[in-house]
Image (cartoon, rainbow, N blue to C red; front, side):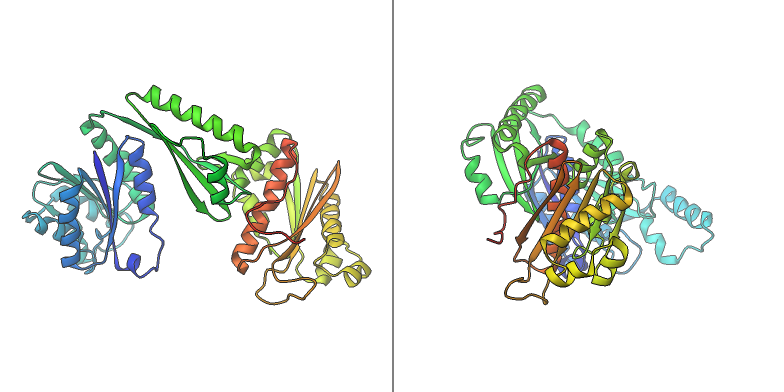
Length: 424
C-alpha cells in the first residue's frame, strides 16, 4: 500500500508556518507498515488542488489530505476534491446539528458560513471531529481512498488515531511488515556517523537513514520482513550493533530528548541540580523544566547576564570578573560552584560565552563559550568555539551542558563534541 501526504494552504508555501503535519502523518502510517511515497504541498488554488488530487489518485493507494476544511472563503478542500472526481456536495444533517450544538454550548451565534462545514462529496463517509468544528471525511475514488482532515495539529492527530488508522488497518492486507526506530545521537557529525557505521545495515532487508536535527543527528534503521516478530528481531539486532559501536553518543530513542534523558537519570539517582546562566539567558532552565516532573530534581536557576548580577546573585568576586572577564574558565567554575552551594544542589551547572553576532575580541572570539559542572567529585570545566549564529550557539551550548549531566550520571567521560571545531 503506497501513501501520499497532501497538505493544503497558502501559508505553507509562503513559509509562514512549519508543515509538521507531514511528519506526523507519515510516522503514524508507518506503524501500520504503510510507507509514504510522496509528500505534496499545494496552495489554496482550485486548479492546483485539482491537479494535486488527480496526481495522487494516479500513484497512491491511500491519500491523507490536511487543511482547507474551515468555514472561510479560502477553505476549498471539500468542494475541489468532490469536483475533481465528479462528486457533488450534499448536506449531512447530523454534522450541521453538531455545529449548531457546539456554538450554542459556548454561547456564540453560528455564522452562516460555518454551514459549509456540514457539506461533503457525495458518497463520502463523515469522520467526526471531537475537539473542533471541522469534521473530516473518507472518500473512495476507484481503488484509491482519500482521508481529508483538519490542518490544526491537535485535531488532526486525534482524528488520525481514532478515525483514520482503524479504517486503514481494516483495509490493510500486509504482505510485508515494516518496522523502524529513531536513535538520537549528539556529538558526532552526520558524515562521520555514516563512516563509523559503514558496515552496519549496508545491504539486505535492513536500511539505515541519517537526518540532522541541529544540534543532534538522528539514525533511522528500518527493517522489512514477512512477520512483525521477524522485523522486530532484525531491528533490535541492528540497533544493538549501532549502540555497541557508538556507545554513549547514542543518548535516546524515539521522543527521548536530552533533557528527558538527563532528568530521568537525575531522578533515578535522587540527585538535584541548579543552573547559573549567562549567554544562554535562561534557555537551559527552560529545557530542564519542559519535562513533566522536573521539580523532583531541579531546584532553581540564576540568569546572571550582567557582571553586577553575577556579583550580587552568585557572589562572584568583582576582582575575579575584572581580572579574568565574565567569559572565562575561572568565572564559569565559580558560577557552577556558587549556584550549587546556594541552592544546596548535588550538581551545579554554568554557561558563559559570546553568542554574537557582536562582542568578540581577538582573544575571545564570537562563538566562545565556557561551561562548568560542579558536584561532589569536583568541578569540570571546558571551553569551545562554536562558529554558528546566535540562536544555534545558545541551543548547542544548552545541549552540551545537558549532555554533561547525562554523562556524569552514567559515569562516562565528559568528552567534547566533534560536530564543530573547538578552541585550541
